[in-house]
Image (tube, rainbow, N blue to C red):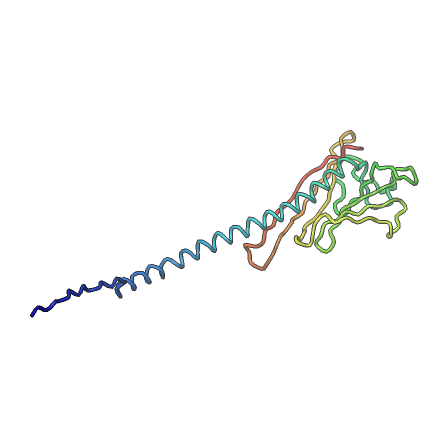
Length: 203
């Protein structure tokens, strides 16, 4: 009588040993903080770059607007919007006043056919704006144009003027700071300082 003996092949079960699992967990535990630190650093740098970009965009626009308007339109500098000869400043050699300055515009008023338009730049509620009007000025007819948005804060805005000689143009100095802040975190904030000088070419 013959018996058939079946050869049972043992199945090999593959897997991780306990030691291997402990090693892998240890490596992950050591690597995760470093990975998170790198990711956080990259995100922080991106936030800082974005804040600088926003502050520069607003500051550049405001400064370009002021420079172009003064260069192309201003023909005199005054201490108030009456534009009377007694109120004209920086029309003689030496340093002039600083603060709010009013510029007489070369634009001819279509109604009076006179050069009686004025404009100035003011800081109100941390926003930079231009005011313009005619002589005599009615507050209801004054035009206001905001040069910056509520996304940024403008501080330290100042105008000053001086003149080197009787035959040289007045030199206007402008400086201000623009700060962008999207949160209380320092990496989400950026402050840029602006400073320039403009020659009054139309005098």
